[in-house]
Length: 117
Image (cartoon, rainbow, N blue to C red):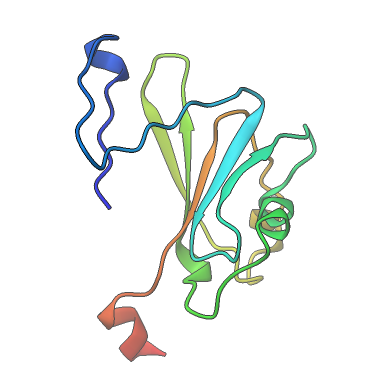
């Protein structure tokens, strides 16, 4: 999947066949990738990383739990990306609190990480 970000360029951009337009409703976060129910979820101020995954139905069998990416938009417009280990090895990582607009992306292992298992 290719993701193009248009916001910094202005408001008038043509859509092409096959484009998907995401319009955040506010007070939501997204859980995407290797979870059972990817999508947007309403934000509760106490929602943690593990709570977000629970709302999304949990990890799939293929999920790479040690390399979950949290993307957060800063007031400057820049994206801040954290790689979070949600395998349970670091309990504090599981308590990382979500914020409005956060995107939690659970990847699938690549060939190299699969061979290391």
